[in-house]
Image (cartoon, rainbow, N blue to C red; front, side, top):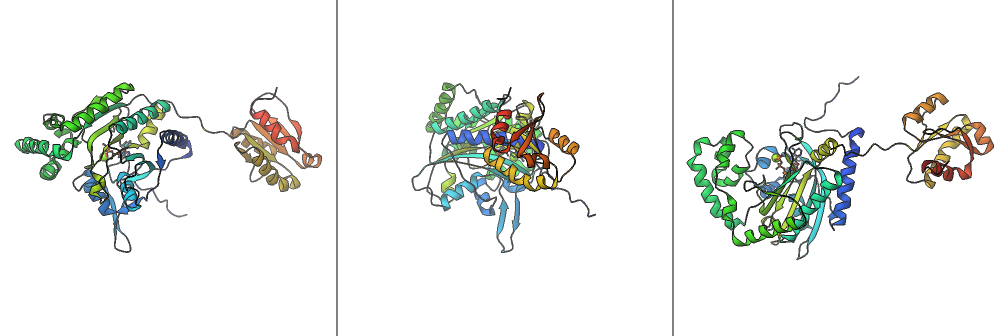
Amino acid sequence: MGQTIQPVRGMNDVLPAEIGAWQHLEATARELLDAYGYEELRVPVVERTELFKRAIGELTDVVEKEMYTFTDQGGDSLTLRPEATAGIVRAVITNGMLRGQRWKLWCSGPMFRHERPQKGRYRQFHQIDVEAIGFAGPDVDAELIALTARLWRRLGIERVRLEINSLGTPESRRAYRERLVAYFRAHESQLDADSRRRLEANPLRILDSKNPQMQELIAGAPLLTEHLDPESREHFDALCAALRSIGVEYRVNPRLVRGLDYYTRTVFEWITDALGAQDAVCSGGRYDGLIAQLGGEPTPAVGFAMGVERVVELMVQAGRVPPPRQTDVYFIVSGARASEQSLRLVESLRDALPGRRIELNLGGGNFKTQFRRADRSGARVALILGDDELARGVVALKPLRREGGQTDCPMDELAARVEAELSGRVD
Ligand code: ATP
Ligand code: MG
């Protein structure tokens, strides 16, 4: 026997026992996004490294430390996507989708970041990513948040809170930036190595530091909210008013800056206290400058990404995972001729009852074995075909979850009888 090969650290299998929650989340999100007029698109898992460097920012944790970057056989530097926004923006530019058009798009799939794996933080994780491109807001910002709030309600998730903030325009941020640099410079001895490096190039990033030793210093830093330009202030006030009008509770967190560089104006985060050290469930914001920065015509945009693993965990904790799907019909077969005919019969039953889970006993076995398998499958109905039944042109039907004996059923009535039994129309 060969030696077992272990999976890659921080990259998980989603097993059948867990898949129900994933599928329920995916189906609910898909349905909601569709209802709000968002269209799905799928972008590659691999992009040119340059794209992420330019979109996310050289001095971010993601680009500095977390990217899976490699050189392919042709000598190109490629990166497994750490997030989806950059790829989506690249796609609307390179497919010529802008030209004054507006897009409401979503995408889902695996993302890759080389972080320290722990509960709720993985190296391959999944996001549902939603982007509204060509909309200046704040109406669309509010509607996107309304969509997420509705998703939590539909999933039965209660332990989440919304925090919002405005980062203003790049111009208004410039003035703030100077004050921030002055503040941190006055306390330079308290800065950790990362923050010292960012002080010149990107001091706002220091506010997003996760280092506990930095928190006190950060708490004393000047607030961006006090330096907003009038238009951004108006934009933000309108967003707040819209959220109040639909009864979505929020807290303005003036220190919310988000880890990626491209945000302008609105930023928001749904956070939870139910996932230990990992509190971010769904994060997003406006990125009015990104598309131009990546070579597209200047186009405002806003979006968010939710962490699927974290949302799934909240669903599990809330006890809101749908029960596993059970088999409806288990088809038991014995005898040589009956075995020959069984697949054809089951296939025609599947034609007649397309939504039903119908399992044919595979690999033989005596009656006792087959009935045991039928019972374990959760089937409510067993169908039994032996050579004797075949000779008489019938299939025996036995309810497994209610009192009632085995009865013969003519082949041409089988689908109707089975459906009646399954939908409880039998007395
Ligand atoms: P965090 O503060 O937890 O590192 P982030 O700010 O890096 O999150 P984003 O880049 O905004 O996260 O990604 C959006 C969402 O994706 C997060 O809110 C979170 O739910 C999820 N997420 C991010 N990184 C991971 C990861 N390594 N494992 C699992 N989920 C993640
Ligand atoms: Mg992170």
